[in-house]
Length: 133
Image 1: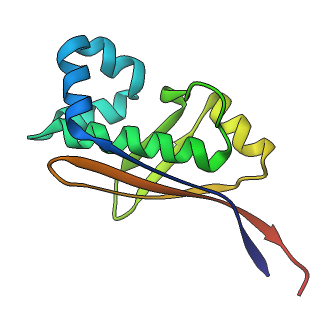
Image 2: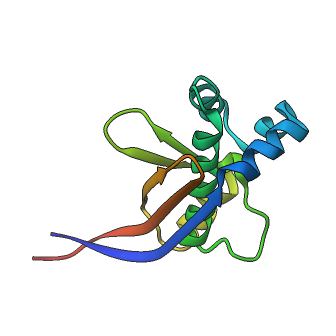
């Protein structure tokens, strides 16, 4: 039997115009410092990339909160939000992955949405514990 334990929850909302303004000001410097190559390819290929970029920032912030990354700068490139199939997936690397492991986190479940003006995401950090039946 496997027991699932919620280790942390995070949520974040962001205005799409903030991301659009940052992109206009910093261009590729902004996207390369904040988004993985896969995230950039996905978002920048969309008709309105700013809603998709904003959703990924929201997902990164929500995930950072869920794993307990509260007092440090978010490791942007170490938290990746991808939608390759039916469900979004959060992939952790580097320090973000290390923090999750230290906190006993096995997986991040995330769900996001966006409108023309806002992007929002919630993230739940869970652990799987095997229990004797």
